[in-house]
Image (cartoon, rainbow over all chains, first blue to last red; front, top):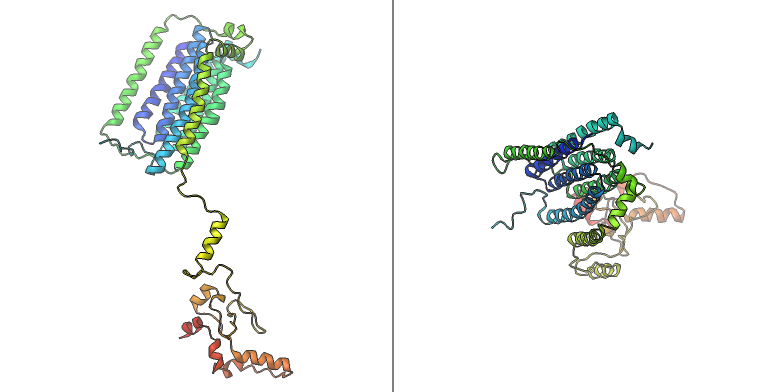
Length: 99
Length: 295
């Protein structure tokens, strides 16, 4: 399969992830959508790595996975902390810094 | 020839793998968007990630495919599921729009973004040569060895920095979710001291309650035990029985009868219960609760 098929798939997944970030209101689901966008970019990295004929793209994808793991740990900890104080996981709820 | 190399070289096989996994991945992403419950969304995302792992293998990146399954599907998504269980499985999304028309604008935005990405990148790929990683993978004896050489030579600084990042993230998660204990936890000794301190002002008896009475003619739980002065011990009857008013009375005459039997008097009068209505000392044997219940 040529690279552009994979890039189109990656772009579709990235757009769906962005759409989810915009329309979903549960903080955990929004977070999953961010993960989906990271995965889409990883797919693009791996596809371009094959196009370029070297392994640098795969190495970058590997680092993206590490950063995503760290990000998930911190993000979920923040969600749990907010849930403890506000009893809600909705992203419309935390508005204490609004005024 | 191993399966990975077969996937990477065989054209029809690669096409099949791509189309099946691509369609499944997009279905998973749509399912994540549509499902109302966060648990369903998490499972859809895990499904998408497994399909992406297969695509990585097809893109001659078997190491990343395995890492994708182990780290993403196995660790990250299961962490998501754990947090969903903490936060509450039933917390489904509200479908009320807080901003009017935001959903349509968002869909328009996503279409525009996808179109832009596809148009720009695919246009840039026009006339690209047929891609192959076979040479790069074979250079160091395999995909894993090739990635390892890059990580530990060209990207070694980034690799070291990620270790600091991971330690910081783990510490941060521990600190964020740590709940401070404002009072010291009570030890067994503290609890014991507290129990005996409550004895007098609050009247809480620290030991067991007195057992029900056991007599020659009755040992059921609704017969009260007798205190040394002949009165009934109030706590010796279970509270529900007292509440119901079904506490049996203890007649001194019964005790006398038992005493007579012990002396050799073998006459048992069946009408004892009617004949020996409480008089004099028997009154003292009535429990307070039973008289309340009967009156």
